[in-house]
Image 1 (cartoon, rainbow, N blue to C red):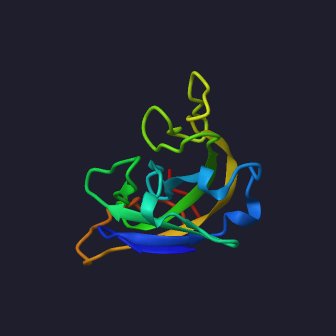
Image 2 (tube, rainbow, N blue to C red):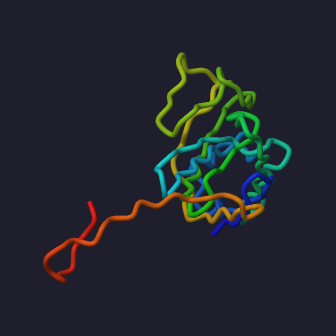
Length: 162
């Protein structure tokens, strides 16, 4: 499980090499597209980890992310609010030619196919790892709003909210 704090940079060490899909290209031709899904509101954030902090070893990949209030999809900047539990999915993206992480050369989602196909455009190979992530509050001032359901009248049977 990844643990991070809101409004701070963080690193994640994820097992990606055990499930590597495109073994016909060198590690230098592989990048990872990370999808963060908030458990509370279902919001989704995609991001490529910071290029200088994307270290692949034989067993895991170190991925770095910057906090920024206005996220940069291609620059490794995310704003994971609200705090709480998130899910993450990591997709392998491979290039045959020059690796460039920008709007014209890197897919934006796991279903994105860049057209026209070319050696300098990334191709999503598939899901290599997924898991849970906990994002804690940085300073304890964040508030979470809950909806209170009134107790039903008449009986003491078990009831379910809407």
